[in-house]
Image 1 (cartoon, each protein chain N blue to C red):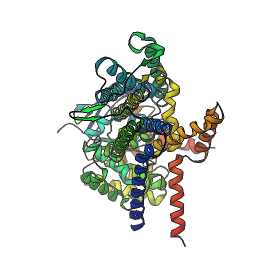
Image 2: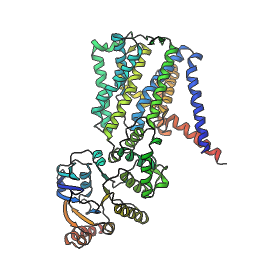
Image 3: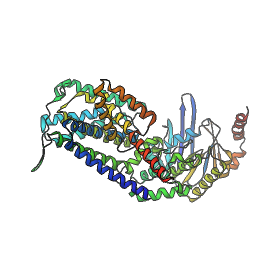
Image 4: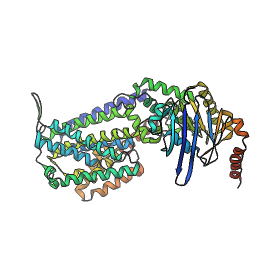
Length: 256
Length: 326
């Protein structure tokens, strides 16, 4: 076996006295759609932020395809093939939908720094950008400003922006949050198809259990910065500790 | 499609007419108006470069007076000690503005938002203090005086720029070049990436863009524009003064960009025209012309976010829509 796509060794992080990651070690295999779940405050977003370089790693190591990327800047990891989306729709609001996707496409092609050529002449990047937009179903919206899109479409656009960097590994942070059921189904179908396409390995960070169990081949449960459970969905669903922590928490949350 | 093409043709005709009027101005008007025309052109070069940073990249700098002064003193020192030929002087002015911006930007670009702005303010004041105190080199508070406007000699060709009219044409030509370069930058992949950084720096980073490096590049380019404008002012006034580096002078490109329109190519140039004209008119009636300017700025910021250019464009759009509707 070759090295896993992403390997995490002994990852720890503290915000003051609050521990958000405690000696986490796990790896993600190529092509395996994995979900990271856990109750609020479990350290899911911190985990993603640490892996993608959004937060500096205090202790531990992150290896991408066997290469130590712990000290690399965000944009360098993106160039290597690690992408992400954000919990809150995070696009370039003042630009058109196509321009949103062109920025990562140009950066990937190493052409973003060209000061005197015309955007309209960047045929290859434009074709790639259009292709990504059609894949997520936004092909017809290319010329609209991103700020004019509906919430659901804006989340789709964010996935498109992330995909335009051609990531080998893509973290989606609560991709369906705030979506209506129709949009949600569309997005999940899209993710399933793209994952089956094999170019990108998806890691979902989710709060919604239905999404997780329907889609994932593997589920990782975090609780207070610690790894609670890791395995196929059926096993995780049956795990007593998970039920206690996760469902117990849900019950608490639901109580007035 | 055809109305768009028509309006594009109209816009092109309009810009040719404007260019012709700009060139003809010194032939039709007096010396003072020509002098004011040069002041507008210099401020417009300063503002056009500055707005690549503010309007395009989304960075607010309070230190560009320092880069303006770097250009001014570079040209002054070159003229007094090396050669009075304006071309090497202007090239040095441009390079000095860019170099000063590179050094200052290297430190400031690490900070974000308010801290970035405050750092640029601090560096601008630092440059002012250095210029003020290094009397042996800069002449201290007297500045550098007696810089002459030598003719531009290119082989057998000699362009005499000592007269106001000739110098005005030189300034307008350099403004045209500055606008052309800004136009090319704005529609290039580089310009789009800068706009992405303005819209969302975190997302840009996650789109694979080394944000700091791009911000520094924009900072250096705007510094080069400032240096060029500073060098030209020394040729115009025949002296370089430390107040060029003062933070009140750093505010001028911000004001003209806001006045003319942050999000348009011509905004700062139009703003410069309005700024200089307003100052000249109001100063005939009262000493506190800033009071009048403050009111105008308030109206612009509260009512016309797109500045003068934005308001005109919106007006034209509304008229076209009105004509198309019935």
